Amino acid sequence: MRAWFRYSCIAGALAAALAAPASAQAASGKIVIMVGGIDKIIYLPAKLTEELGYFKDAGLDVELQSQQAGVSAENQLVAGAVQAVVGYYDHAIDLQSKGKSIESIVQFGLVPGAMMMVRSDEAGTIKSFADMKGKTIGVTALGSSSSFLAQYLAEAGGQKSGDYSLLSVGAGTTLIAAMKQKRGDVAWTTEPTTSALLAMGEARPLVDMTTAEGSKKALGGLYPAASLYVQSGWLKTHKAEAAKLAQAFVRTLQFIHGHTAEQIADKVPADYYGGNKAMYVKAMSASIAMFSPDGRMPEGGPETALKVLKAFSPSLKDGKDKTIDLAKTYTNEFVDQADKALGIK
Image (cartoon, rainbow, N blue to C red; front, top):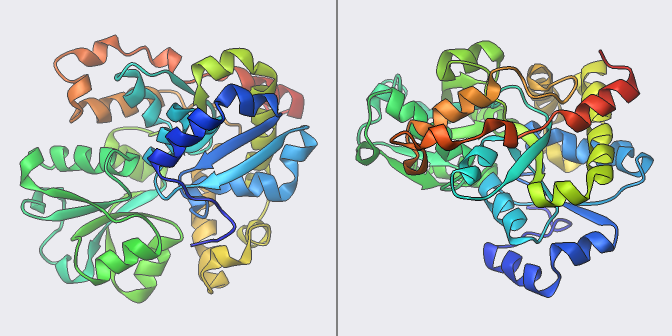
C-alpha cells in the first residue's frame, strides 16, 4: 500500500534472522520496530513518535516497518528479525502459553479500539453473535488479536468452533473489498477503515469496542490492546534502550491527550487520510480517549485478556491458564521512570 515501507513474509523474517541475528542488529545501534498496520489509528503512537522527533530526542535510531496484522509482526519478533513490535498485548499471554516470553513495556490502548461490523445487507439477519451460525467473520489474519476477539465473541454468543468460519481479509482496502464482494458477513475493523465503511454504507456496527463502556459490555472489562512489546531476553540486556523507548512513547501519549484531533492529524503523512482528511479527523477525535495518558497497564486488564483467550485457546483450556504468570507478560518499570521524568502523576 505504501512503497516506502518494507513488507516481509515469515520466511523472509527467518532468512533475515539467519543472515543478521538480532544481536548483530542491536550492535549497530538501530532498533527495528514492526507495526501491525502502521496507518491504523490504534497504532498511531508509532508513526507519530517518529514524526514528532521523540525517538531522536531520546538518542535512539529507530526504523519502523509494517505488516497488515499483529500476528505477522509477532512472528518477525520471535524470528529475531526485529527488536520490538507495536501490536496487541494479548500476544504476550498467547506466546507464554506456547513457551515463548515477551513483555509489553508501554501500553498505548486501554481498549481494543475496534468494531465488529456487519455487512449492511446482513444487518437485518445478524443482530448479535448469537446469529453467526453458518456465517463468515473477516479478521486481519488467522492467529491475530482480531481472530482472538472474534472467537471469544462467537463463543459468548453460543457458537461452537465449527458453527462459523474465520476468513483472513487483512485491513484497509482489502477488508473493504472483502465486504463489498460479500466474502465476509461480519468483519473486525479499526479506524480509519470503520469510518470509510460507514460513509460508503457498506457496513454497520455490531459490537463496539472503541470505548471503555463498550469494551466492558463486550468483554467484561478494559482490554489492554495496542502496546510496545519485546522479547524478555532482549529486555534483560537492553534496559537503557527500553527506558528511552518508554520515554519517547509516553511523550507521544501526552501529546495525543494535549492536542486536538486536527493538530494530531497534521503530524501524520497525508496519505493516511485516504483522500478524506475531514473523515480522518473525525475518526481521530473519536479515538483519542482510547489511548492511555501515561503508558501504564490498566488495573485488571491482563486478567480480562486472559479470560478472553482461555475461552477458546486449546493451550489455555483444561486448567492450563493457571500456569500463566501475568506478571511476566508486562512491566510498568520503564513507563514509571518516564512518567516521573516527565512529571506525570
